[in-house]
Length: 640
Image (cartoon, rainbow, N blue to C red):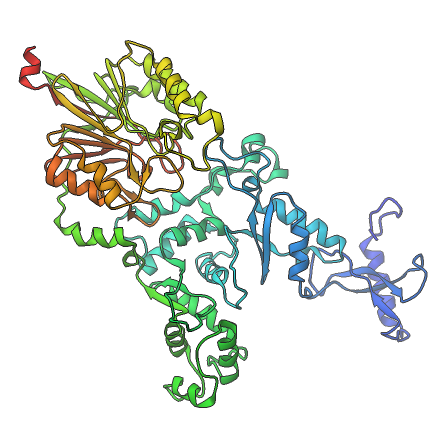
């Protein structure tokens, strides 16, 4: 029924009000509840002051007969059927799975963007929350639910495999609600930095919280690129403002990537059943999570967990705790007749459901190793490496009797965007990842671009994205014939052409006017990409093969602690064996690498300048200019 449908003329609110008054003042005949039911209507508002014309349908009466009754709109939403919501969303091609938890439905999207081609226009990863909310609204309204009862949509990478009352989703939600103080469903930059300051998070440098936040900000959607800011239908207006906000998906990724929250795996319990879930929560935010967790079981909200509530929790998580009054009294150390928040936390920690500590200390073996050697490392101001942008002419004059080296890396197919920025020099060094996936077309284009550059010498190594240059690669990123190693390498050589000065190095040395240069593409295992080797003996063997006395060392991945920190955690992921070989044996004047985009820049230990020459940032935007240094030509070579 519609007040403004084509079948009926518009009805004024004054007429409706008069009719309502007449009906309420009359003595209505009681209607037996067993014979009448209210048919739910989609009503946008839930205020009891809003009255709607809703049909009363007599059970068993012909479908054509309607008895209209004035009454209040829906005051509260009925419980939503979790399986029903999941079934409805399963009809959307972009949804892989979903789960209704409280007021939100958490959605795992179908597929992820292909790194070699970017997101598909129809791919699941490009669908937006509001699109799925509209899809779900249409479906649920048809089933009689009011629009205000439709759950909000949140994206997640994976759903919890357990169905305990307090999952990792509840952990994320508790923290999101704590930071989203404006209750907008998004977190602003100001809200994030205020929370970090209060909790002493991301505070090692003045800009750390800024860097972490903006590394998490989403890109514009496909709709934004296609329709710009002039079509509110796609909700893409004013992206310049909205980009200073992050949604739930970006926030939970930030928490997990930085190690603040983690779903942990438990050690072998020696045949004893392990609890159904276990979480690591950083000590600086654990109180927020504990309060929400405690309220899940504190049914009477009196601030104490009583015996029956304790019993339910033991059953939910399958804890190896005795369920008896005597055991419970031992846990109630304060004698309050129940467990308070502190005792609740002690229970969780004793049961191995909750682990706490500082995320900076919850590292893998590489993080622990870095902390052991960090105090032995020297960091001096770089003195011989400069940023050079040809458009601005910012590079200093070249030293007399020296070759100028221009360093770039990780261009990922965006090399032609660099053309106008490439400064003058003698030798170009590219430290790998010149493509997105080593496809024939992009490699050939890179070769042609190299041959067009005015440098006398161009020295290149491959990186983990240059799949076709790894003859042993068999991972899932390969695209069949398009990344066949033999064919692509041959096409690359042909595209470079003879006489263009292009040299490709793979565990090889090249001498240029007496300057010894060595190139190697390997790095510690990183996803399922090319030139991966496990840390330890395999990588150490590669680094051990590098001759002593090398002047310039080119590798794709950085050494430990030298341009290897990743956002948002700022954990170090470089190679410890490489660092040891460089500082103890090889001692080159320059190491040129890439791989970790957010680590672009230079560090200096007093002997070696460690140059991370990445051109793209972690969002794959071209933001870093080439780095240059001058290397004096050895005296004997200069004379000849």
